[in-house]
Length: 212
Image 1 (cartoon, one colour):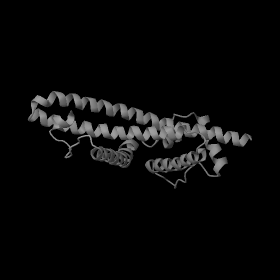
Image 2 (cartoon, rainbow, N blue to C red):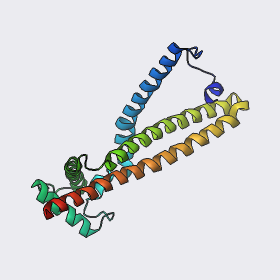
Image 3 (cartoon, helix red, strand yellow):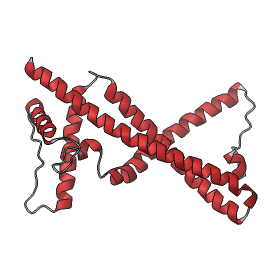
Image 4 (cartoon, one colour):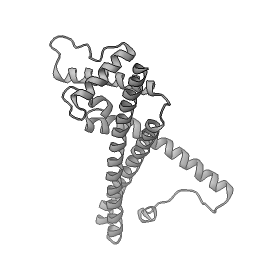
């Protein structure tokens, strides 16, 4: 519908044959790879991380973050130190500016989370599933955001030139925008669930190993 309203179509004639179906499958696969690269290299790196001020796995271990209780963070840090024989505090230079200190702490927390994630391994499939869901919703967010932007441009053009199509394009713009918002909310939730599951599993596994 949107393609017809925009006045363009793919330069391929799909008649339902095996060759056309194979081309369609290949195009879908390539489009998925491109969306994956765009969502990770652009949307995640330059938008999501900036809006979230770091991944949940990095941000939740900051001293002033309130997501975890002080006891939980202290227990987690002590288990990390005992398990990997590493310090959980970054090396801060004298008179370190607050912005640089924040960056160093986030980098250190990223390293600690990576150790916890690899230590958990395949003991429980939950982190892998949540991480896959996060990647899926990140791609959906990218796709719907692009479609909303494209339909918005077409809507503006329709208001100036083809006013008869403005109503339909307005509906599609709203639908794509709403879908992008839903995808963002689910993407954020899955990123948080992924980080929480890794930390919880690490604490449980490390505590069991210590007890044994």
